[in-house]
Image (cartoon, rainbow, N blue to C red; front, side, top):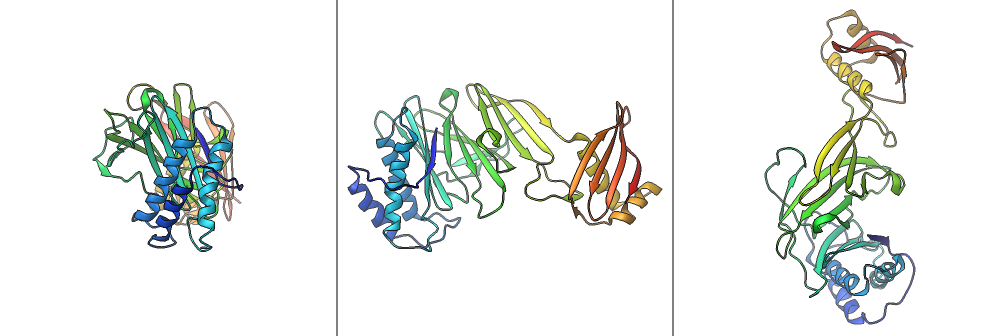
Length: 339
């Protein structure tokens, strides 16, 4: 899968007609800011780019070829001299698999998926509904327009069985924490009739530290669960959950779920309960020092002091040192020192 943002100036031959159609469509846009409601003119612009990527790239194409196409249309936007438009930045990704090519195009803060037959060049019908979640009872069918994804990127990859995975990370103006959706489009006869969506939250890192990883037939989705008794900054990775799937025919099969920071999760739950109700002297001591509203966590440290005992230090305005035990009766908070 190739994924790039247009950056350098290269002239693409044989596409002047497309460029005129692109600029004519761009001139008819409803506004310069992307909204949740689809803009038919911008949708047409993205479809023109996607079709040109289909024509100009191949499974053996280098990233430079994709960049060439993206930059060609980026220059078309620049020629309009609309510095205030959301659509100046153009990016995209392409993936080839078993007679089909999937192309994701992003213009500013909105993106679109297009899938074509490599034999006829015609578009493949995409799903209009989806269900949330894999590995549990599916929810109701919900409407979706994968050809208009506001505030989301669109990077497709082919999985075994002609299934398309679309990595749709949130587009952020600033910061390192982002929400993401990962779509799974299951193929039917001449179309993709159904889709499943998984969602999560992650923080920026390198490609080897992504929220989604595919290793052979194993897919891993990583997400961060929010604490309930305190908050963290956007950089801290706390309460990570890794969902591991087996790839094959049909939707990925959930193999196992791994949750990290187990003791700290239990302590967070204890703190939340205690903020609502205090019956023991220890619980009253905690609330008297901490209060009943979540505070921002500055630092934390978990130290094992025995087979089933740990010390958990949490630094807020004050530092709380909890002695905890995980035994046959579950998780317990034994003592607390506040400094």
